[in-house]
Image (tube, rainbow, N blue to C red; front, side):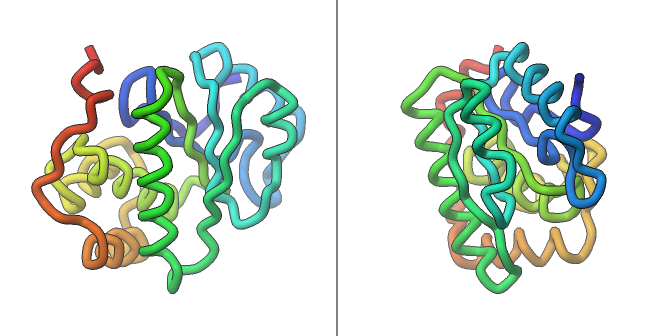
Length: 172
């Protein structure tokens, strides 16, 4: 089952989506199982969760995915947490030729911020502001929270210009 909210930041290498099965009260185990199978069919081999709890990671591991957990718990910790996530995803892209799914609990401004930070960090866009515009063009919500989260990350971690990650060059 194709997830309702997803996008490829790097075609066939790095995907961004809501949590498999949906988030919060709308989460369904049967949907999670079907979506994980869909991701596997797309070539995803690693699931990186930003959910505050380890919810669903065991199921992903049992389904054969490598899993990583980089929880995004609060706006106060966002800059450091987003940087840790970006570094980990970048390292995965360096070390493995497999595709990665990064997911948030719900399709909202946290998902937008994660996508924008990853895009800016990996050099997919011309910096954080361009990354937010790119997320908006993909149909993700760019509101005041996403802007604050990305701006906080940018103040502490971005150093333009960012060279494009080698995985982008192979993005035929």
